[in-house]
Length: 386
Image (tube, rainbow, N blue to C red; front, side, top):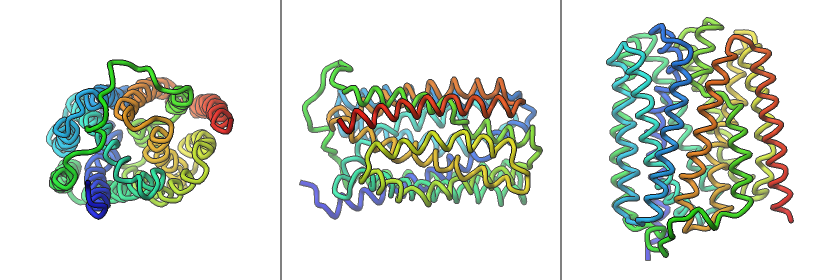
C-alpha cells in the first residue's frame, strides 16, 4: 500500500519534471521555424518537424503497447527516463550545427523521446491524480508543464538577443538535467504503479468502446487544421518578417495562456466531461485568422486561441481517454491515440506548407476541418448523454 502523501509527492514531482523538460522542448520549439529560416532552409523543413511529431507518436503506440503487455515497472519507468533523457540532450545540441537537415533530425529525435515517455508517464499520472479528479489532476500537471513552456521561450528570447542561437540552445541543457534528477526521484518514491500489477491483456485492440473511437477520429480531424508551431513560426519569419526573438516571445505568450487556462479547463472537464470538447474546434480558425491578418502591432493576440487549443490537447484530451477507457487498457489507448493523432497532424502540416502563401486558403481550410471535428464531438456528447 503506497502512502497517500507519497502519491501526492509523486504527482507534484511529475509536474516539476514536465516544467523543466518543457523549458527545454518549448524553448527550442519557440524558435524552430525562425532558426530554419535563418539557415535558409526550405518551407517544407518546418513540416518535416511535424513528421517528427508523427514518428514520436508512433513510438507512443509501441511504448504504450509494450508497457501494457509486459507490465514491468522497469519498462514503464525506464521508458519515462529514457524519453526525457533524449529531449534533455537533443535540443541543446541543435545550437552546434548550421545544417538544417541535422537541425530537423535533432527535433525529430526529441519527439521520439516524447513518444517513449508519454504513454508510461500518463499512466502513472492518471493513477496518482485519481484522488483529486483526473481532469483537475491533468489540469494542474498542465499548469506546471506550461509554466516551463513559458519560461523556456522567454529565456531563449533573452539569450538570443545578446548571445545568438548557439548559446540560446545550449542554455537549455541545465533544465534538461534537472528534469532527469526529478524523474529518478519519482521512480524511487513510486516504484510499482498499479498498471503493472493488473491482469495482463492479450494482443488485441478489442474492448475499446465506440466513444473512444469516435473521440479519436474527431480529434484527428481537429489536428488536421491545428497548425504546428514550427510552421507558424516559419510563416511569421518568412511572410511577416518578424525577428526570431519576437517569434519566441509570441510563443511564450501562448504558453502563458496555456498555463493560465489549464486548471480552470481541467475543473470544467471534471464537471461537464466531454461537453467541454465542443469549445475547442471554434478556436482554430480564429487562431489562423489572427496569425495571417492581424496587424504586426497586435500579433501577440494570435497566441491566445493557439495557446488554449494546445492546452486542451495536453490536458483535457488526455483526461478524456482516462474517462473513456478502463485502467488496464490505458497504456495502449494512449499509444494508439497518439499514433493516429500524430499521423494526421503531420499530414496537416504538409497541407499548410502547400498553402502557406495564401492566407485565404489557410483560413478556409481551418474552418472546414474545425466544423467537421465539431460535428463529431457533438455526436460523442450525444452518445455520452444517452
